[in-house]
Each structure stands twice: as structure tokens, then as C-alpha cells.
Image (cartoon, rainbow, N blue to C red; front, side, top):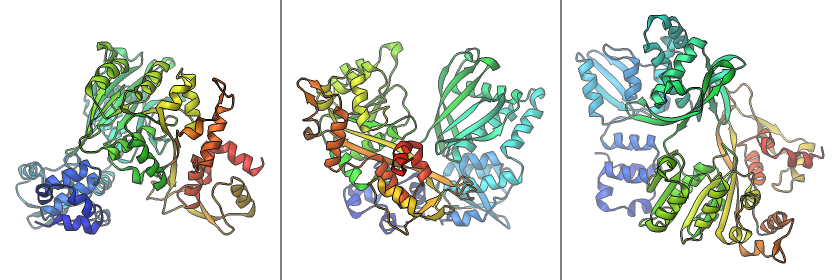
Length: 567
């Protein structure tokens, strides 16, 4: 077998220190080694499958190789089979078929192929899952498997009593949205037009329009998949489903419906609960921010809050830091109203008020008696749960949670508004991390722009990041390119601020026994003296480095940018 340890070191995905921390028996067993490194967040899913294929001496095909290939059709093998196993025939010879597969070795795949196609000898190479899926998609488009075609076919079959076309259309809508990177899927009626829309990088885009007859049947199919009773469509309903993307990949989807009273129907929102991958290093945080949060996460007690509006990535950031902070021998537990993502090394519990399992009972019975080191509490919304969460930081455990607030300073004000006493805020809160997500400019089609004298003056009026004459920033290409699916943006990056609740920040906030009216401003000024960088500073740095553009910053900081320009 190939020595994958040498390959990993050469690829610089792991260090000698990472490997030396593992037992020798783990290092010598490829499967165990890959599994251990994956659990620690060192290997992505694609890297896991690639190294496993290398360990068993399968040849490799790159994404670039696959981009030039359109899969072949062979007897007994259809598109659904290729999608289910993320595998496709890429070369045909005399009595031989060469397959590209994303999961090797795979005895089930091999036996299925032999059962379906006994005439040929079948050999295999490894290729990235995304590259194989793209190749199958190219083949599908050539054969007329586009969403529009499937909608027209489903409409034509409505009166035949055949539900297969609706099932196939619904599955393909989910599969298309997920594989193109959507965070959620919305099937509803807007301006009396039934349609299916997906959210990419925070923006909704229409996938396909639906005739009302097809729309109703797609809703029915989704209700069935989520286990929601059809007669209850007139009131908001929640559900959950597991959808099989392929033989090697399943995803959890959260279902929520809203009645559309004037149309006598409902709309459905599906939230994709993507596998928990990645690390905080690629999230967009600066190294200084990561070091400061690392310091907070090493504390034995207190509360750390991740703040931001809906869709700001605060829950993802909290989970990434929990993964990073986990140490051998440490017990982590979690309570959420609805579990969004599976977290390794964390014992997760979901609230159920019908049996009396609430945040209050979780703290009283699990936190106090279960002896955890770290407690993660999903987003706190009510004043009562907010007070319980902050008070839990005084129980000798480190508590991590999320909250809706515009920035780190307004988080403190939000706690006060929800009835948390000032003394508790200043003694129990160890730090607040606030953030937003900005869309990344497509690296292949973004447009360079040299700053004008007026733009240079306005940016430097902000007194955060120094721009110089001749500096080039980048703008959004409205036409986009094939790489970014003609959006001009591809992915998102975080901008953040970390407020560490040090004693020197709060010594001047009192007037006698009461808080000063301007106590928030006092904390803001003191934190800036101690070198705290706010979200706008990080955003401007991303603009200067060509990662995002000024229009993205204006979505969140329009007032400050207008003041700098004197408008």
C-alpha cells in the first residue's frame, strides 16, 4: 500500500506534531488514521476519500481531468444509479469499462455494477465527488434532465395518476439546490407566481417556476417526506427529513411551512443542515481574533456569547470554536431547541417542552449533576432563558451561546434589556464575539479599480485602515463567469470583533450604585484604547485585499461610510 503519511506531509495537510500525537497503531492503519484526523477537523470529506483511495492504490483523476469528460451510458446503468453512488463510466473499451468513483474501495458499488452489467470488466479510478457530480449534470443536460424539462414532464403526467414524475422533480429540486451551494430552499407563491427559490450566499434566486398544479403536488410530496400531516397545512408546521443525495451522502433538512391565506395554500422553507466541516482558520477571522477567542475558550467558567443578526454565521462560528477548543478528557454538552448540526465530541440534547425538558430543567438536572466542562446553549431568545444562560456561567462551567444583537457593545445592552443585572453582566460575561458575513468576490472575474482621490480621502477619513494613492480595490462583475455561476460572488467571509470583558473596561461605568447613561460609550472608548478592532476595520481590510467590495460593507455600515464621505 501507498504510505499515505508521507503523502499527507508532502501535501501539508497535517504536521509531524499532529501525527506524533496519535498512537502508533493508529498511524499504521490507513482507515483509522484517516478517521482520527477527520474527527479532529484536519481532513475534509474530499481529502478523506482521496487518501483512502491512495492507500488502496487506486489511480487518481483530478477535477480538471473530469471537467473534460462526459459520462457514458452503458447497459443496466442509469442516471439515478450514478447519482446514488457518485460514480460514472468515463472510458469504454473492448469488453472493459473504466469508472470514476468518489468512494473507494466500495464493495457494494462493485457488486451492484457487476449484477447490472455482467458483459464487461470494470475498473475504477478515484475522482472528487463534486467533479463527478458536475460530469453527471453535463450528461443530464445533454439528455434533457433540466429542472424546466422535469417540470413540463410532471405537468404532462398529472392526470395519469403516476406520481413518479413528481417524486423525481421534488428530489431533483432538492439535489440541485444543495449541490449548487444553497443554504435553504423556498417553495412558495410570490406575486401570484408559484416558484422554487434557493438562497446562495445570502441572496434568493429562482431555480424554476412551477404551474400551480405541480406546485401543490410538490408541497404534498415534501409534507410526506417531513412527516407532516396534510390536513394541517393551514397552520405553521415544523418537521425534519433525511434526504439521500447519493449512496455515499445523506443530508438532514429542517422543514417549516407558512400558510398563504389569500391563496388557500402554504409555502415551505427547507433549511439544509450541512455536515459540520471546516475550521475557524478558513472562516475569515484574523489570527489575532483566533488567539483572543482561544484565550477565552481556555477559561474554566463564565459565559462567551457569539452575536449577530439572523444569517450572520454566529452559530457556525460558535461550533467551530467548540471543535477547536476540545481537549482530551474534557466533557462538552449542548442544549438546543432544534439540533441543527451533529457535533463530534459533544453530547447534544434537543428541548422537548411536551415532556418537561426545557432549558431550565437542562441546567438543573444535566449541567449541575452531569459535571460537564463546557456547555453549549443554542440561541437564547426569551428574557427568562437569557437570564438562565448568564447565571449558568456562575456554576463553575464555561458556557457558550448565541444571541441576536447588532454588535458586541449592543449585546451588553440587550442583556440589560432582558433583565440581566449589570453586576452579572460584568462578572459572568467573559467575552462577546460579534460578526457579519460578506460575499466574496469571484477571484476569476472581479474587476480591478484604482481609487480616485475622493474615494481615497473618504476611506482614510474612517481612520481604520490606511489606503494609499494608487491602491487598487476590486468591484463586482455583474455578468459573472462560469466559475461563480454568473453571480460575480462565490462564498462568504466573516468580519468580526471581539470584546473581552476586562475589569478596566467597567471601572468608570458607575455613578454611585447606578449605571451611567452613556455606559456603553464608555466601554467602547476603553476597549478601543486597549486595541480592539471592530467589524468595519476587518471589512475594510478585506476590501483592501481584494476579497470583497465596498458595496458589501455598505449593506451593514452605510451610516459610518456616509459620515466619512461628508454626505
